[in-house]
Image 1 (cartoon, one colour):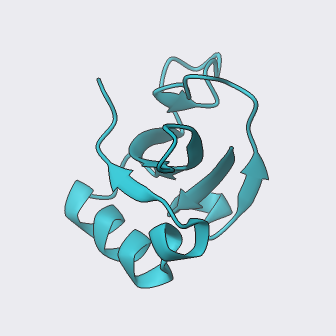
Image 2 (cartoon, rainbow, N blue to C red):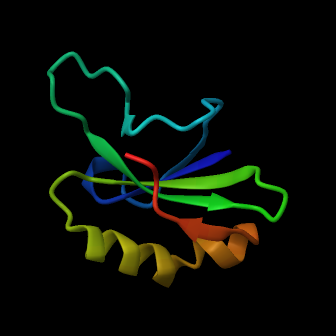
Length: 87
């Protein structure tokens, strides 16, 4: 699956992520006790596989992360349906 980042120091960056299911925070262990990114959206294909996940910087409101993800067209790009993660 592809991890996409909104906000923070790696805004608009992407990377491959092997974790299944995706972690709620990225990176999972920062050592500082405060996660750098929080999982906001999971894009699933018709067959149920996860195509992409969207992580947002902790200071960004959920609505802003959703707006930016839609503006960047992640769901369309990966031909997947965006859903909220199970927290």
